[in-house]
Length: 490
Image (cartoon, rainbow, N blue to C red; front, side):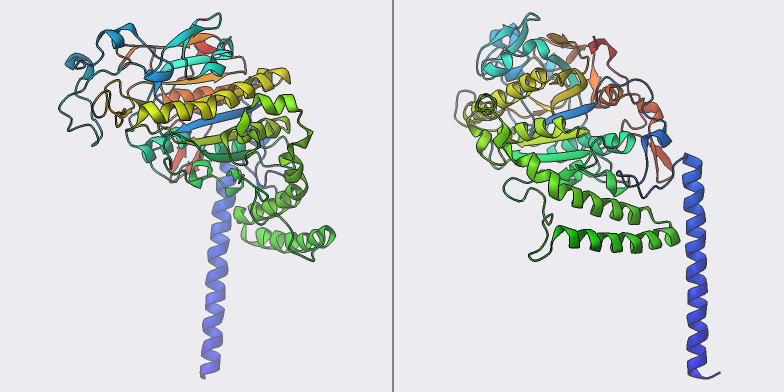
C-alpha cells in the first residue's frame, strides 16, 4: 500500500469514526430531549424551548414580570429596617454571649476584644397605616410603606461577599449555576420579541467606592442554554456592544447577510443537533431587532419633566441608579420578563456614619419613584418588585464606637428584604428577630424560600421546575427543603 492510499484509508476511518460519534451523540441528545419533553425550535424568538412544551406556568401567575433591585455589599438591616429598644438600652456595651452565641465570624471581627452594641445611626419612624419602622435615612421610601412587605428573617449560610452574592442570585454558592432571571427566561420565555427576556444593569454607589465586584455570571445562564442568559445594558451611547452596523453597511444588507447565515447555521444544526447553534441563530435575530428597539428604549425625551424630577437629580446621568430605575420601568413597560439592577457600595465595614447616608441617598428617591410610577401606570399589580441584598450587618460595631473608622461586619443569620406588587400584602412585616436584631425569633425565611416565593409569583412550582445537569434534575431551590412564604400574599 503506498503512502497516498494509506492516508486515504486513515482519512476514511476518521470520517467514519467521527460521523459515528456524532450519530451516537445525536441519538443521545434526541433521547434526552424526548425524555424531558423538550424540543428544539429554531423559529422561536426564545431560541430553543417554549413554555407550553415545559407545561408552564403550573398555575395562574400573580406576576407577569419581576424587577429585582439588588443592593450589593450587604445592606444594614439594623440601621434601616429593624430598630429595637434593647439596642439603645445596651448601646456601647458588650452584646450578651447568649445572643452572640458561637457562630462563625469573618476574619475582620473574629479577633476583636469587644463586641459593643451599636444602635441605628439615625432615628426612624413608623410609616404608613401598617406602621413599618423605616429609617429617616430613607424618607422617600417611608412614603410608600403601605406598598411594602418587609421580611425581617431572611437568612443564609454564606458570610463572605462572592459566595453570598452568588448564592442569592443563583441558589448556589459555587459559580456555574443559572441565575434567577435565566430560570424565569427558560421557564416562561419572552413577551416582547424585540427585547431580551432578561436584562441587567449595574451602578456604583457613593457609599463604599469601589464596591464589591459584580460579575456577568450573576445574570448568566449557567448550565441552561445560553439563550436564557441576561443581556447587560451599559451606560452611555452604546448600551449593547457591537449592536450597530459597521460604517457603510445598510440595514437591508444586514438582513440579507443574516438570512444567509441563518441558512448555514440551520444546516449545521440539522446535522449536529447542537442546541447552541440554534441559540446563535436566535441571538443574531434578537440583535437585529434590538438595533431598532434599544435606541427607542434609551431615548427618554418622551418622559415628562414631572416624571424625570420624581426620580431625582441623578436620573439624567447615564449609569446612575436613578437612570437605571427609569430604564427598568421603560423595559417593563415593554414587557421584559425579568429586570435586575445591581447597585454597588453597601459594604460599610468602615466609615459607616459617612458612607451609609450617601448610599441611602442613591437609592431612596429613585426606588420610591419607581414604585409610584409602576402604580400610576397600573403595572404594580402584575409586577413583583424585590429589594434584596446578600446578607445583613452585625448589631455590634466593627472597630471602636464613635470613631470615624467605625463600621459593621457581615451578618447572614438574619437580615431584611422587602417585596411589593403582584398581590403581595403591603404595609406588613413578616418574621421577628430577637431583641438585638441578631437571631431569628419567629418565622425564618431562608433564601431558598425567597426563591421559591419569587417563582410562585410567576406561576411556577419550584419543586416541579428543573433542568438535567450532571446526572441530576437541578432546581433553583436546590435539594434541601424550601417553602413558599404564603402568608405574605393578599
